[in-house]
Image 1 (tube, one colour):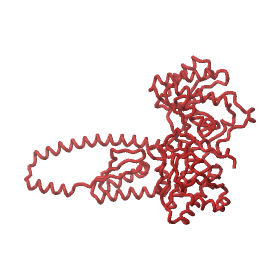
Image 2 (cartoon, helix red, strand yellow; image 1 turned 135 degrees about the horizontal axis):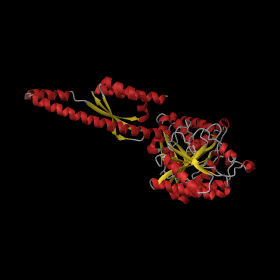
Image 3 (spheres, rainbow, N blue to C red; image 1 turned 45 degrees about the vertical axis):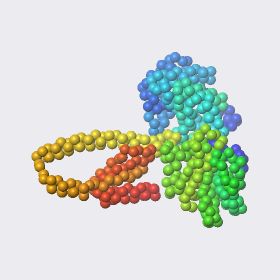
Image 4 (tube, one colour; image 1 turned 180 degrees about the vertical axis):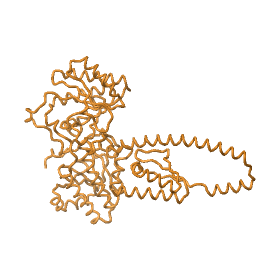
Length: 501
């Protein structure tokens, strides 16, 4: 099988093909230079004024806002620098530099711009094993990230962060590289497609004890049944950060992602039956620069994979150094047989998505390196903060009222010591039960109304706690013990229902 079919850290074979030299007749004269900037960095009215001022200073056909390139789900402004004359490329770059300087004056010294490039040029920009994008970052001192593709959005966004001069240097370098490569009609026609496990060819490497690897390789029926190639590799052949034991080997499988996933399911089942006394784990060899992506912000991505795998334990055995291009780390999976095979299949699919620049967002509604859920969670947390601030202020007013009313009652009424003692005993008996429960944000979004209704019925006061997480928060429950347990039982049963869906 040709090595060209499998790119370990660049785009997968499904999307990495670029235009051939025979397409010269369809080559465009000039790269179209498009950008998008979020509203939090500059408002559209201010940006429009800057574009008009800069356009008047440079001999360029047009610098204008472009609604056609509005990114779904993000508040901001898209604009384009339009001129088909090759000789004016330097003028266009100078105009970009001026725009960035004016934006920097209106905002902090560090901000973020998105350059929009044709989908067909993504693999070229990333480069073999991600080397080109790494070189651009090192040379310009800017943070450059190729964002996830959005379904039905014709261009791919490249996030460039830093000071205006660093952003400009990155834009200039990317523009010159794409201009030198040349742009074809096919580059603009091409659209990102959701990952098709039946088409994309992948190379998967797993770590097992050498006796297990020998046993698997003897079963030649696996290669025929799943149309793939298998062989053993030593740790000396692959630069893995985690040192393997002397009795461990690497099992390599090459084939379509779907066939490899099915083969691995069969392999794990066979190992569990043949080596019942060995408590084996599954370790997937993964490029080190994917470690932080697989973990996600505050572990949100790896938690989601574990939940989908119905409780498997997944651990990335790496120091999460994204700069280690060409280095590999291990992803360990522990659990029952079903947990292992489910989690391994999901991890392989996720790694293949990373090779393709990120998963395709089917809804086309959000764009974020750490997925749409992270965006939703941040909005939910802000909403909760506002609700808590509002509830805390109203509760303080109620407390002040209750204090003044109790003071009046105490002045009018004088009770004997025996009455006070008996009332204090009753208060101790009636003292409410308090507990806390950690709840995922997505669950509260689903059951918020019903939960409030049950809380009122049971006489349980439900309040969001002060401690917050990226994708979960603490609920405080106060009431009698039986009612609190009823509410907790309802929350857990609803969570189980959602997970089953």
